[in-house]
Length: 147
Image (cartoon, rainbow, N blue to C red; front, top):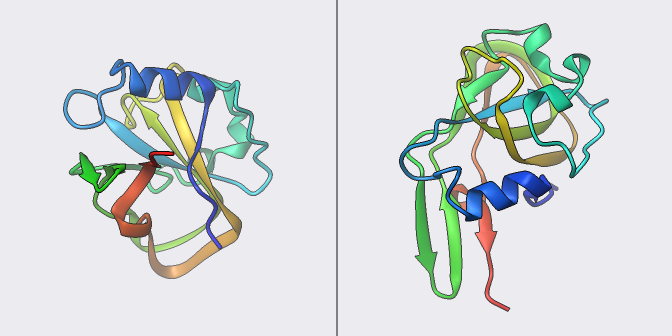
């Protein structure tokens, strides 16, 4: 079972204050994280994650991918933050337990890219000479439900 999206504290504030613009201005990307990653809600930027926990050290070409065609959509009383499928590679050997979302330049990581949140797959997902991609349920990364 895939766990729901979990926000980093500062990521939630920046997204909901529109400092990070889901639909237009911000470049949002996904990053793959090893199973030894220890999620911490106080993480704010990419450099708060140990380099050994990022797949970018081993697979620089396939560990990050743009989150494209992003929209915010109302669905009844829910608000959905949606995107297309995120493609990390078509014929790759990758393993990851977490997928994180960040805002910034994925091709030029300097450590100050804003972390938004992450999804824990609950177990390590693998691809061997195959596609590694992620499609959130109903294409919605974030679902805000009226209570």
